[in-house]
Image (cartoon, rainbow, N blue to C red; front, side, top):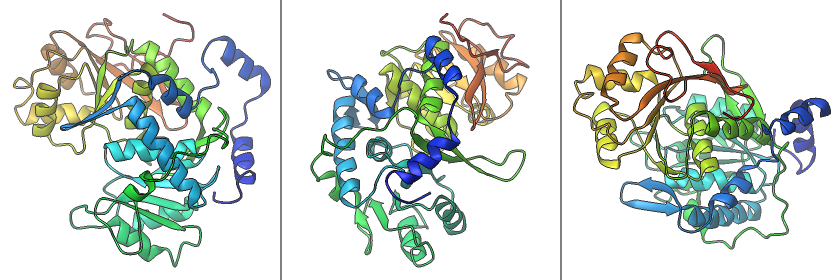
Amino acid sequence: MGGDEFGVVDDLRAMLRVNPEQRRAYEAEGLWADDTLTRWLEDAATGDRLAAIAGDRELTYSELLDRSERLAGGLRDLGVRAGDVVSVQLGNSIEFLVAYFGAARVGAVISTVHLPYRIAEIRTLLAHAECVAFIAQSDQKEFCPIAAAIGLKVDLPHLRHVISVGKPVDGAIDFSTLLSRPRLDASVDSPAADDPFLLLFTSGTSAGPKAVPLSYERVLGNARVGVREHRLQPTDTILSVAGYTHLLGLYSLHLATRAGAANVLFPAYSPADLSDAISRRRPSVLVCAPAHLAGLIVNGLLDKTDFSSVRLVITAGSALPPDVAKAVSAVLANGFLTNLWGMTELQGTMTGHPNDGQEPVIGSVGWRFSIRPR
């Protein structure tokens, strides 16, 4: 994937090309609207709207825009150019948001690496993507992906920069140092809607994992419709249990950015931590997999969790067992449980809707995403 600033972008854009007639139809229906992540962030960065809540830390969209522009400037100074692949292995954190929006601003293609992955998986993904920069946490328990990536550089000729979040590591570039750079020069073009944006690896549910390139218009056009389908508002607070390295987590992040809603950052799952986060942080929207909800039930925490703030649960990633759907629906006094189905290549395609009632959720993935506004 790595290469010159324009050739790689043109090659990937050709892979993702949509014929003009189809494009006009999407635009006429309001599905595509020249969307990019940078434009959405700029739109959300008005006033003091909260972008993220991480423990006792808060970040507004305006602050996120500033930090991402500084990171983009730092990446540009390192030689990262449009079409280069930047791989990110971080939990749901403020640093992930800055890395994600910053890499997007400079025109990079972002490839996420799941947190449990160790040296063998990291080597495979970085090699396949021809990644030029790798951003990860330096102080994970029992494993330092930064040290591992530095050791891999001799075998990965495209990997030029290893960027460390957390404590400094010899041979790595400190993330905070990049944030101290000036903002990206305004003369550097922002990405276009048909530019390649993500390189996601499928979960391999039905076959071996494969890399899927996606453009802004394909990904964000889906989230644009998703905001309408889920009836999200700027006043919503969204907690994604799914990691942002996963498609479901990114879908949640894109929904929040489009709606101008706040993200409650949930770094690592345990049933007790999820119960506590819902009760104390009081999200209005919960995005999770059925297993996360089942964990609350198995550990006797479902009835002990204060769901009074939750008006919508979006569950996806695997089949939703009927007994889990019934149990969760019973504790949502002020909200509704919905089921979402999608795939890496298409994002979300079918979902339940608030006020559908319990029956459409049980034994169904809901309804096809609506073309026209509801």
